[in-house]
Image (cartoon, rainbow, N blue to C red; front, top):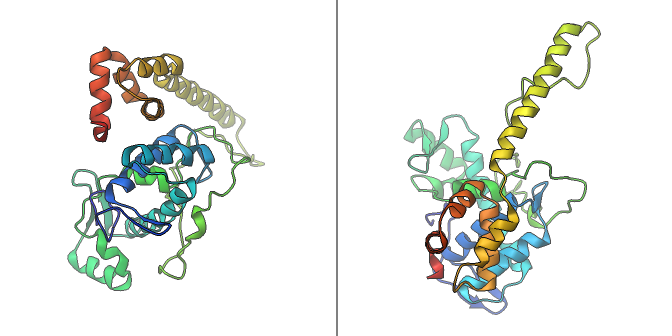
Length: 278
């Protein structure tokens, strides 16, 4: 199992006919690229669109000097999702929780671990192992999608074929839903509802929307200025410029830090984020 929480059998990249055996670095690059695409709105209803897979392939091909197609990325994501479900199933059980400090799955007792692994052998790969890319895996393999994404135009991307019902003990479950918003107005009115209470709910909902708008305005980035700043970086080829722009555009915090630097510091910032460019 590698440091990203993705169990692998081989550490080197090999070609076997038309099949490609993915290395640790290739997996990390694919997950990072797809996480960026998800934050850029290219993941709707758990499915990535063609644009996301094309950008991910550009990232992997550029770094490893390959010529992979989008279908290769789709097939690899099936495997990654299959392994992610094992981890997600562990964390859904009582007595298990995620430790963000150690980046590991903690358990209340060794005996519980042993009992769980006895029934779910695949879980053994996650016991006592660091999962460095836990948040990226949740973004790529979970239900993450950018606010306002429409589900009406989404088609399956082919990665949901690994339902795992026969291989795993429990049926596939979705990520835990967010807590119910106490300020959200009920969809149906009770016959004996209090008009005063309903009015207060409406006011509270309006305040919440206003607060959300203020928070959103603080995270907005001028995409034209960001793209211009990236393109001004010396010795950065076009494919890397595209990848850097999409990465920063999907992370407002890092984008604001990048824009605050001068040109020399911006170049250092990018090469620190993407160390394999050196």
